[in-house]
Length: 475
Ligand code: 5AD
Ligand code: SF4
Image (cartoon, rainbow, N blue to C red; front, side, top):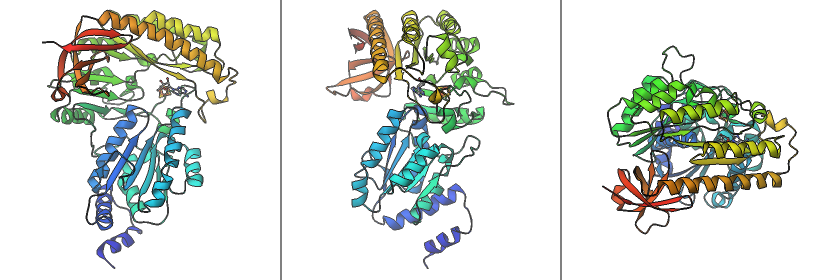
């Protein structure tokens, strides 16, 4: 028996640490691919929380010896990190997994793995088990830190691996991270959600709120800054409840101030803020932190009090508008964005019009607008939902039209002004055009050298066509 095979046989009788599993997987991969490095394609669906998780998964895969590719055809491991927030996101995943079947038939050695929010739902894991026999590995959000062990069990051969743990541990620390961008970094400060908005699946698939220790967040922030980050986005489903009930007494505003006080030339952003926990202390702290972007993403979901109550949101239209008024008082140049759900079960057209009137009153910079999608196990999924989808689509278009008008007006106001932007990349069209984002989270396209990507530049707005802004470098 080879030393490796002996180690595998021994493994059946004991468990290892994740570091040991990383080494064991590395050895199995070296045996499987003696002449080249194996390649992984990690594809992420959904929110920035998933993007941050994927960066940790890639860190663990990299430690096992994987290189990375952007196509399934080139990959020895295809891993989809999935999103469950709406049905459309789930349908895309099922479609894309199905599309891998012929490839897998050709490349028997290829490993197909699925993880993330969708997989944390037992009915989805069961459907994969029954209908997608070519999928080798499925794991939920609670098992991310165990990727080395799960991959080892797959590489060792034998049964397919399904790991949908029901218990969540404390926020995992010490995982390696392979960041997609050096200048734009995601920094998770908490995981999970306790709010149980009646339409939302997140509390079921991400578990209860778990905040990272302030020392761990600060250590990662320092590492990111040392690596050249120009923008740090603090992530959590509800960052405003960071540190709640913890002994250290560091709440979200205090944490933001601590990061703001770290030396370096970088911006701080955060998402998502829940209006019910958005305090004056937070808005005052933002105003006092010179590195905090003048951007607040504050989802209001609906402008009607009855619907808000049915959604279990915990605030009223009036309270939301008061918050906005206060935020603008302390930060007059604040850019505000929001999330909206159209067609919540039982919502009437008149109630929907309250959402439109709130948009007209606040004049958001931009909106993420969704048609309600029923989610298994949520309270709203059991509510009567008499309005047909086609009708909700009409309301949706009506709302978008109003928002387009507001955005065009805002863009026209920006004409002639100069903004500091963080240059993100070339525009899709190329032709020497770059795109940069202002502190208010507004994109401006301008001609410039690719070398400017990842730096701050001052750009004067010279063109505003509907909601698209163009400009030129200014000194
Ligand atoms: N249907 C439609 N939109 C939803 N969102 C969350 N759950 C649902 C659902 N079931 C939206 C909310 C949330 C955003 C991330 O996704 O607007 O703020
Ligand atoms: Fe979902 Fe509400 Fe939690 Fe946001 S705050 S993740 S919408 S339950």
